[in-house]
Amino acid sequence: MTDFLKDGGKTLIDLLKTQGIPAITTSLGKLSADSNEPWQKALLKLGVNLVSKHGPEGLDLLEAVVAQLQSGKSIDLSALSLQEASDLLAVMQRREAETRNQVALYTQMVVEALGKVLGTLVSILFKGL
Amino acid sequence: MTRSLLAFLILSLGVAGCGTLRDPAVYATEIQYIDMTVSRGAPAVHRLLSTSCACAAGDPVVWTSTVEGFSTEDCEANAVWYRTYLARWPWHVAMMRYNGGLIETDPGEIPEVPSTCDLSAPVETSGGAS
Image 1 (cartoon, rainbow over the protein chains, first blue to last red):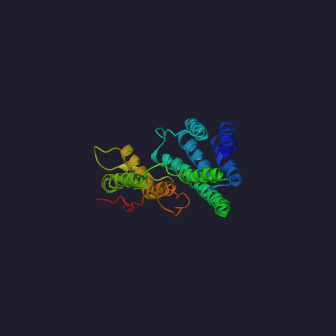
Image 2 (cartoon, helix red, strand yellow; image 1 turned 30 degrees about the vertical axis):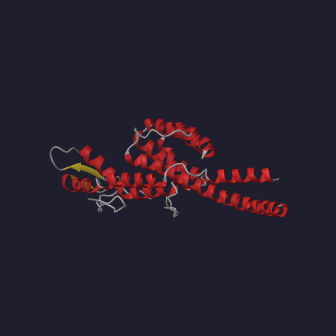
Image 3 (cartoon, chains in turn blue, yellow; image 1 turned 60 degrees about the vertical axis):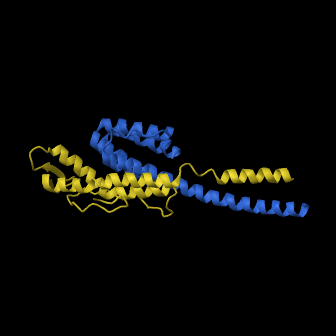
């Protein structure tokens, strides 16, 4: 998440600042094409919705949200509508799920590797007794 | 050698126990309670929108009040609540359970929240409606 937020998130904010709201839809296509994960596309969509609905204030909201995501802090949802809050929570939940899936896969590999080592050590121990 | 093996066993047991942050039973009950709290409010919002508000189709749809004492802003806010609830609430709850390790099935990608005048009946989740 951090890499995308550093690059894609900053790119999106810069784009919105420099090119304004009408240019967002066109430019979003390229950013979305560059996004690898569905949650990245969802974050971009949230950005467009925030700016479309709130104008310049939406940009501030998006910037604050990205900064909070980058720092790993909990997000202040109070300035968002219920649907915007749902959009953001959905992005975070999907990201956590994808990380969880990767962690589960890695853990399985580690456990299998440890199991082999453990089996070898136990057999050596029993031979030594 | 024996010391190394014991150290390895202790380390392995420690790693195996690292995944538990919450009591699963309490966490599952918390989610169920939150689901119950939200879901049991849905029928009232549904009735309110049906009896006190009118919706004009479009993109986006426009909600207006049809009764005194209930404003158009109230209608819009309740409509946003209801459509977000219908489209997303069961999915958010399922994601809470999945990310918390309570279920094994990934709920999948984020569902869209449609902009529509359709007032479908409240969804049934484990929270239930009363």
